[in-house]
Length: 171
Image (tube, rainbow, N blue to C red; front, side):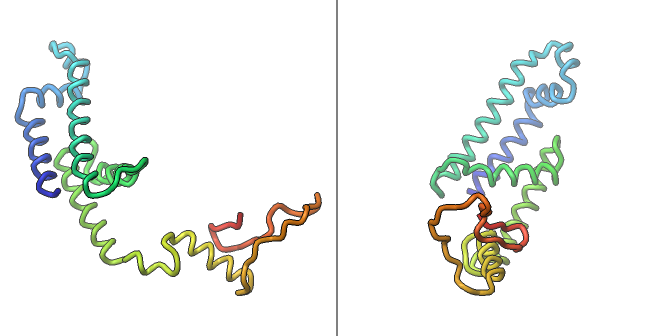
């Protein structure tokens, strides 16, 4: 996967900085009116840039899907990481994006290696374990039970268990 990523990055850099299309693409992105005045078909450049982006996204999908199953919403993590890379590397800089991607990748992998999932107290979700321990603490350590199915009077509150466990609230 890393080798394909390196080859794709070199291909993209060479395509944008060493071809006539790359010059036209950079000129159009910097000043659309001037490029149009010089005879560049701006709409065609936009379509070709979109096609290049779709090709790169398809290549990324073809690399990732064999390693994990494809599910709805699987790109959300990648979207957040891509946003962080753009913030670090800069919006218009391909070299900056490469450096930002390397920084984010190294920091992410170091964080995964340093803070293993098994270090969370008792659940796979830290928020759920926070809520559970907060509810246990607010109940004095006794077992929390489901409220009985008695008919509610109009004076009763909708909430049967309350907690002051920070951001976690009882349903």
